[in-house]
Length: 629
Figure 1 (cartoon, rainbow, N blue to C red):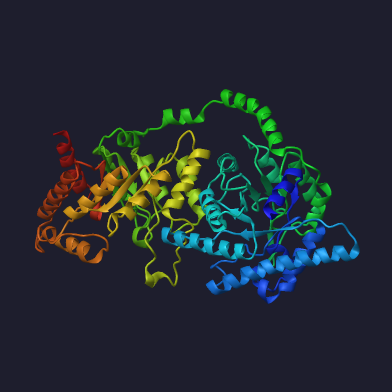
Figure 2: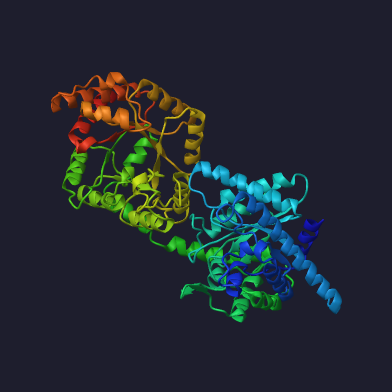
């Protein structure tokens, strides 16, 4: 019943939501930690904040549950704090109603929405666990009578849709209202690269959500500007809750410029262009909500109004676009490398990719010499590792630019999620693109060795799938004219081939164009890669790493996890072998491995042992001869 009534109210007027909880709580109680902890330790403080927002005119309260998850609380505490938060919100509503009755003031309906914030995770296993945590949170909130859910301050669409679907599964046949809100930066992009336009276009047709909008991240002026650049194609329930402005830190305290009147004046422009729910995020206080209450008027079909405004602007935008000189076309004409690698791969031609390691020190002579030798042999791509085994080497994008400028060869830097936060990852990709890089291998990365963890930390803002999805968004929004092509690593080992195939498909959905496997030595592993090819129809480049000595073969067999080197291959080498004989053995074995995979491999990916590029070129030449037969 409450959801039906809530929807009817949205049809008749703009719903005023509350303002910030966390920043306002910290302003009132600066020494007391996170606001969510006070649900239990100081419930009267949380109730008082809710009441101040109600008295200011808020019609929709958010429970103080934004950060109630495993990042702050234990599993037992999560349930306790969720229940307490709902209890505090209900108590505030009840107390305000009682005060109005006693004073004879007119009552107005106040709804309570369960706030669900993002939970950070880095790998696929944690993603599954986090989705189950969202389910648990949703169940507890639902059990406490919450029927309006606000999934807020998210940076990616798929997770939000999964949460919304989980909430509907929990509700079953009972009607609920699900509002999703995304946080963007001043350029109109989320941290995961989704533009406001993409979010609006995507979610306008998503029935699993009742409404969506934007909160946090930016102040009202930037929000107003960005909303004016969006095209709405249909009516939708839309919310806008910007920050008070931009925070700055003074003597360890988080501060915002405090000007509710200015905030309300800008928000009036936003409201006039059509919103259904309006309120405030970080830095806002009850004074801001009171100022908003003063400017709100009855709405008249706001979504349609937005469509009309967008249609008028559309013609002038198209005119400018038609008159523009395409800088991308000029760049393509000047480009020395073209798109031969990805074109050959997509046309079914076998490709040859060789990995060379960046230098450990300042001397890049051997690195450059290797690149020249590969260029002379017309390899399709040189790929450059990104500090493998968590051991620092020269940065892969910079070395890619260096070698491409020196030799003209096409390069594919590895991009490892372990060492850079999202800001640094985006910066590296943008810088690489500006410098002509168009190919990447996106990997999660080897963990930092246990002995180094006391001084070296892993970052893992992203895993490989998330970063691929992020770059997919960059391609759609930023690199439209010249997209980045990217591949992924394929760890074929594992008991469950179906699970490996599913992860491959997930990467392909995120825009992964091809896979480079770990080095393959055994017939069983060749058969496994062939099976994965059949299950996914992915483009696969079979990994080949020549073993250059008996010692090298023993090391790979006994010390590198996930790599299976059969005894017959190890026995092909002797401890007293001359270098030339060992290399000829390495070439023979590598060519045999490649020959066995010719029926399915879309190409070969060579890892160069000890910088022996001439050896790798010899293997490539023999495999090319087999291709020509």
